[in-house]
Amino acid sequence: MNPKSKLPHLGTTIFTLMSELAAEHGAINLSQGFPDFDCSPDLVHLVSLAMKQGLNHYSPMSGIAELREEISRKQYEIHQANYHPSTEVTVTAGGSEALFSAIAAVVHPGDEVIVFEPAYDLYRPAIELFGGVVRAVRLMAPDFRIDWNEVRSLISHKTRLIVLNNPNNPATVVLDEDDFKELIQIVRNSEIMILSDEVYEHIVFDGRQHFSVSRFPELKERSFLVASFGKLYHITGWKVGYCLAPEILTKEFRKVHQFNVFCVNTPVQYGLAEFLKRKEEYLALPSLFQQKRDFFMDGLAQSGFKAIKPQGSYFLLADYSEISGLNEFDFSKWLTIKHKVAVIPVSAFYANPPEQKLVRFCFAKKEETLEKALEILVKLK
Ligand SMILES: Cc1ncc(COP(=O)(O)O)c(C=O)c1O
Image (cartoon, rainbow, N blue to C red; front, top):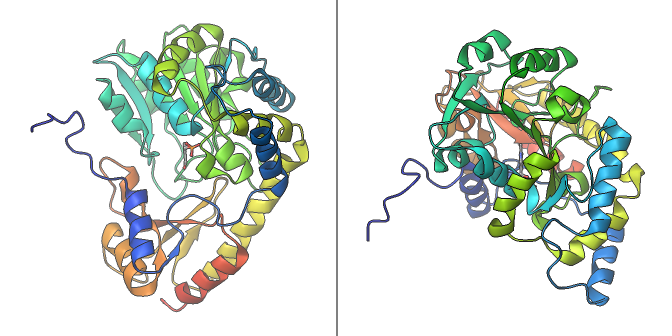
């Protein structure tokens, strides 16, 4: 058979490859972005209670009302942004489904989509699958700041969407208020929409504020905002997230969502609706992850790696040019196979990678895991 691939240049994602390599070689897996510690037992209890109560069938397509109401309340409390639970909040199969459904809903063949690279690997294939054309803005280490004049120069009547990821994976930077002022000027009086991937919204460090697009009325009216309970509650395997968008955009979003997954795991939604009432759980995230970041950074300071201090997310980028002259992909494989610490090459997040020697570590791990990895890494001087 010749299936006439719609994504002929695409293979398996780098995360799958590196996690498989880590398992095969018994390496400490600091590659894929998931915690190796467990979620709250109370959350597990709430979900199993829902299962025992027989809440095991299809939920409403947009999610159970209780959860949509809690999500709406949270967004208002944190960002003073109003989303109507019945028409503007949709529970999704993780952040991934929300991103994919939003792209599928609005990108037409020939539309241009602005993406900042390094970029999370889902955006480009999803855009191209629906005939969109990626116009990449390349951000460079170590500060990865956006040159908004470059963004301006890429805008045309074909620009349909701008994809933001804030805090950014893998660049680990957080946008500031000035970035949003620039963005507002660029999209004002246009039909350009925004897809704002905010799955790491609570993982920001050093007292930084996370500015959500939902904070800015001129952006909110044109944005799909994507969030993930996987990142919020250390439950990446449960695959539940949500999309917030004004009614007119949500209508289009749900046209795809209803035939993509129809609805999301019902008992998990009941558990989350109850658990979301406990604000202290997510308000504790910055300090929980900052501790891990600092522990890992302090350890790396004794090694040949030069770390870039993360402003947010689960990740830390480090330059290894003092240790090796290998390219990023070969270095990552060498580190995984020979030294048993798995990482991700940053080149995997660019269509045209710049000449650099950077790898991404995930520090969302138990201290003992980080300690074991550091014992190995400090010897690679
Ligand atoms: C930037 C970014 N967006 C979206 C996702 C996907 O979120 P989920 O696991 O909820 O599908 C991830 C997961 O790693 C991510 O890093």
